[in-house]
Image (tube, rainbow, N blue to C red; front, side, top):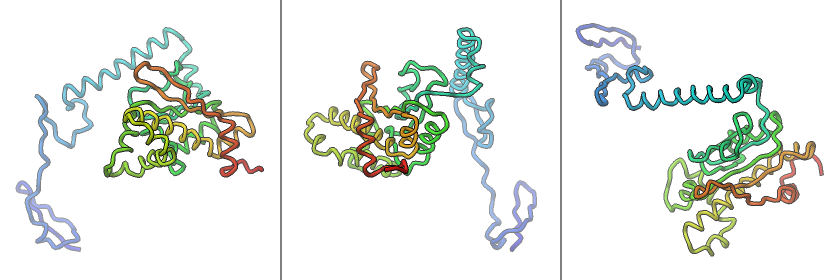
Amino acid sequence: MYKATVRRAGQKITGPHTRPADHLVKPCKLLPIKVVGRRSYCSTNKNNMSDMPDYLRANHDKIFDNNKKWASEKAQKDPDFFTKLSSGQKPDYLYIGCADSRIPSNEIMGLDAGEVFTHRNIANLVCNTDLNVMSVINYAVRHLAVKHIVVVGHYSCGGVKAAMTPADLGILNPWLRNIRDVYRLHEQELDAIQDQDQKYNRLAELNVLEQARNVVKTAAVQQSYAKNSYPIVHAWIFDFKDGLLKDLKLDFEKQLHDIQKIYNLTGGD
């Protein structure tokens, strides 16, 4: 252990260090002051709302204004709304969808707060190595007792297009590989489609179907269905052009029967 002496603005500061003192006797760097518009702020005050640039603060304040308006409208429409909301949740639906900001899960289904348990990620994937989605499914089925699980994709999906890009996408590679695996499973069908946009959209549909099958493979779903005859798993896709959901007609009972030949997790024959 060494003692080093550092001079800063005429002050002498002495303290223990693990390197020789002569390596540490150097001028100290001060953090730069950032200037945005008419406001300047030190980087140590990033959480100070009064130092936030005007346009960012306006965006921030708008959310709270919207929230007050929403709460007021809900209370006027149903004086007991927040009393019921605070008493707990009992949704019938688990929604697993893409993180795309243009698809508000409960709104496109015509449902309100407390009626949809939601999980979203890039390209609505259900991977058995993803503890996040596996935890969501387990909680929704075993504790909330949802009656339906809907996997919802959408046309013109950026995740699907990225998966078909012949490039190294860094940290996205292992995630998008799941979509590439879907392509591999349906390569002959997809290669027969000449129009590129139609090919992407068909892959988006096939991806939804494969992810729905992955939901069926989980122990929580299989065991709950054997005991309660729910949840039912569905595969849907959303179209930005008309705002409508399309049912991809997943035959849940057939899929369950076929899957359990290999992935039977009910503990029975």
